Length: 161
Image (cartoon, rainbow, N blue to C red; front, side, top):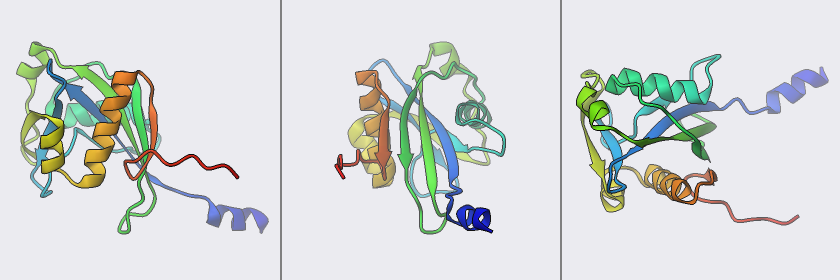
């Protein structure tokens, strides 16, 4: 019975993973979904038995039709959602897309209207604040070559007990 009580307290978060791709100017590739009012990054939910990295690779292929190398983890964001419960989101470094990869992009028409490389200001204008914070923190982590832990897209304050 104690195991069941412990089980009911354990978190069972939804997990999602995506990749940040950059152009030569450091702008981030964003996609315009058909089913949302704001822009997103390529990515989606992690399926049962799938790692976050493999989910990012799969989602990029499904959404954009390309399989560029996906690199290091840039950010992990704990971002629960009232409607969906606990969520843990992983962002990986997709690096700078080659001209060949850009030429091969074929968006999944049922899901995406368009894509574009956006500056920090454009990201803030075209997406929700929590996602903009996550993307900008991950881009900064890439520049610093160190992954970052976030809560709702922000670095949590250090706490001493």
